[in-house]
Amino acid sequence: MNDARDPASNDRRIEALLLHREVEDFNNAYAAALDEQRLDDWAEMFTDDAFYIVISRENADRGLRVGLIYCENKGMIQDRAYALQHTEMFAPRYLRHIIGNLQILGETPNGDIRARANYVVVQVLFDRPDARLHQVGVYHDRLRRVGDRLKLAERRCVYDNLLVDNALCLPV
Amino acid sequence: MAWQDPILAQRYVWPDDDPTVIPDWVYTDEAIYAREIERIFHGRTWNYVALEAEIPVPGDFIRSHVGPTPIVVARAEDGSINAFENRCMHRAAEFCRVLSGTTKEFICPYHQWTYDLKGNLIGVPFRRGVAGKGGMPADFKPQEHGLRRLKVTTHRGVVFASYANDIESFADYLGPEVLREFEATFDGRKLTVLGHYRHSLPGNWKLYHENLKDPYHATLLHTFLVTFGLLVAGNRSLMLTDKSGRHGVMASAKSDGKAIAGDAKKEMRSFKEGMRLHEPRFMDFIEEFDSPWSVTMATIWPNLIVQREMNTLGIRQIVPTGPHEFIMKWTMFGFEGDDEAMTRHRLRQGNLMGPAGFLGLEDNEAIKFVQDGMQRVPNGRHLVKLDPATAAGTADTLISEAAIRAMYRHWREAMDL
Image 1 (cartoon, rainbow over the protein chains, first blue to last red):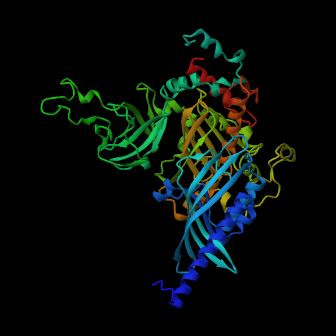
Image 2: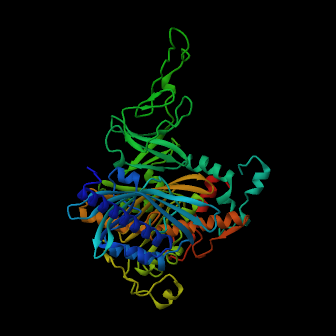
């Protein structure tokens, strides 16, 4: 199948590599936007009809739909970004999002790219000495090409932690 | 004074017997915490443990807690709901390790002692030994070694358990006024579970009750409530307490926010003029309850909060884990008969609450700040002086701490302090 002498096979492999790299770049930019708390930039990484949810594995495994954050469209994502920047009271903190183990899983019938990746969020509070593992989970994604950019049509963040450490103040 | 030790008796003296101050040791002291477990959570209280909707058919069970103590709540073959400690009578192993499930019996993994759905001991391997040697004593009676059982009651699909066998009925425990509010939310429709939140909270468990008996903070801390007129100084509202002082209901009626007087706005830094949502449906209130209130937060002593925040409905169960920390387990629910649009409305509005909620995360942060303040500057005291016209009890103004004073009047009685 992967005969290096077969140009068509080579093209397919190169295409897959480029796509993999493109989604990886997208995820790196996503992590950077959150780490730097550029939440308007974060919101712009979603399509207008995007679905974004942060849900416990406990709920997801049982088919229960409640999410820590539950956004049915980009407007709700923008509302979340606005509130966190302008109205919400929470202690200042540093966050580090690490995204890895990317897999491109295929395409949906409408041409969206299906992907998954593991994520880790590490949090530093200014009144505690240590960086603490705040959340660990997996992204189940649908990405869509809008113009020359990839955007998220869906990101389901399923976290393994049974207990959230106090509050999830910023998105994952 | 029940302290045997005169040094302890001296340490835990309420300053000047003044109900408008609370000493820090109430929230930070290990001996006080241990006494709370014994006298409150394991005492004459009804503790929330589950919703019937979580264990609908015989064999269904769920892990839960009374105070910090792990229990199992199970529905037996006869349909009865049973609650017993999650602790094997043989060597104390916490035998039930899954969050919930369905089973015919509980088998302790260590030595396979087996219990039925009511907690009766029904199997002890090698009880008679092997080849005439070993085994349990001949006079060992399994019926005397069942799991430690708790008294159980249910009301409108909500399950409570108590260590006190002679405790009053649940209705008498709540009192008529708080019961009325409880039944306004649990209005007879069958509940459907939408999901859970679980989080730890680095503060004393009582601070969570106090936060919901403190309508003053709600008008100041929570921009969402204020800007959208959900709970604003001047709105029609009530801070109800029962006769005993232990339960409370914070209630308010939604206004459109336009009626807020200019002078009230000036006092509320969190009021954001002209704030608009991209998705305004998120704050819609669909009338569904026979109640004058669009929002009620009921604090049912000692471990339950019932949230009816417009159409997002939830149970919050307090699991204390020490003086400085507790776990909160939320069970969000709707009703049988909700269509998909209503369920999605509840899920959308759920963004207000929980550990990432626009209101929820602020409360969690505030409670952490209070515990931090006490731990780092010891031997202090809190002021709860608002609304001196009401010594303790129900207040018809939001700018009041009378419900907190009522709670501590009860707490001091229960704790004999």
